Length: 423
Image 1 (cartoon, rainbow, N blue to C red):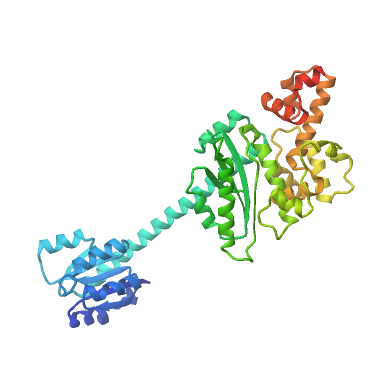
Image 2 (cartoon, rainbow, N blue to C red; image 1 turned 45 degrees about the vertical axis):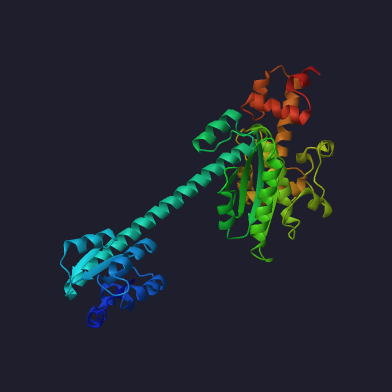
């Protein structure tokens, strides 16, 4: 039902309209009346009517002054001005203050009915259009968010070359022209609106949904402010989440800043490994290295590669059935350049977020680290025992970009593929 408010200083006229019009029959509910604009204004602000019917000549505050204020404060309210003056200037003034209709007294029931029906149709049409636009914006936003997430999934998996990252980012209007990058992951149980609104205010932060309740925040930094931007990000997440109360479930952690797009996968590996400890530390909210170490769960440090040198596929007895199946699937598909965590999680019939956590906790190695190790082991074998070109070997083990393969090889093996072959 649409709400209607009546302002008329002549009591007989006001009562006649109030009692003589079958409001509900026309789809309206009568929410209030007043004898002048001054008395009407606070009541109108309170009831927020869809339609205002007001006389043009009244003491204290006339209908034109009232209409001007209502049009400014409640732009969706439709205004009908009634007047005993058949004067063009009055009508022109009524139009200028936003009146939709100008009726001459005496107002007949049929005339009022016709106008009320016209206004009802107009309001309904406007609401339908507004709902359509809202739905369009919501669907477009969801599509945009999905496209952004898919882009960063590929970037974090290391399946895109640097050129491909720039090309795809440009299509999504994402500016990657920064010297440093960092990643923050935040799990928030519900009501993420305040968090999203905060980070959308700053160009240095790009926030998007990572899965059902986890959000990823990309931080774009220069050489000197990466720590400042990361700390500010964490502090505001803490502030927002703590305001929801002690029973509210939330977790946040950050990676280590990297100065190359090609190292985004490394940054994500670092942050995702720490993020997985929320399953082991349900009372911890900010998952830092210090918090994890104090809890007795030491993260693997650089230089501990020898502790993880054994091939997981050769010793799966201590793993859950889910991880055994996942390892078998990875071992058979790691040479596919498009292999992703989501694909393996789907095969394992668990969510990507859960799979990432249990894989890291059971194997002491992230999904990306394990896939990379499988690829590097095969690459080393091919470099030692064949004369194949490095580019062919890169493609064979799952890297379509030879340069990126060389970067990963040097980082994990401490030397270039050429140096390894000539050693």
